Length: 155
Image (cartoon, rainbow, N blue to C red):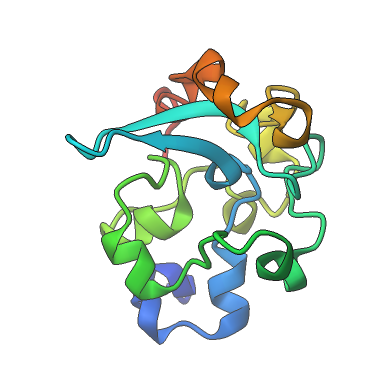
């Protein structure tokens, strides 16, 4: 019997930095602007991407320095993953946190970083940059698809 992959045997806090970073599937969903209802805590997703989100690669344009450009960028840590309620349902960090396996299209499973896009999970071709709209217009870009991507996906 073969050795189990690290995401099945380690908790988020036990992972090396390289293992942690590889859990990101490159979907770009966490880089979408979200609106929070202050009274209910409900999160509404938009199709508006962060200024640093590359809408084609679905990756940060300046990942190492992102917090210098976007001070409110949330750096995912095991603690943050435990407390954030808005992580997309397909997020590798969320899945491992909840004791679930990664989807077939996750690059760690498929061996190909393009499968997340081929499976229709990523934000590729679905976003506008926050640089092109007024912040007052965010409500005009509300979407529900970030919460439903992967509903038909099999693990």
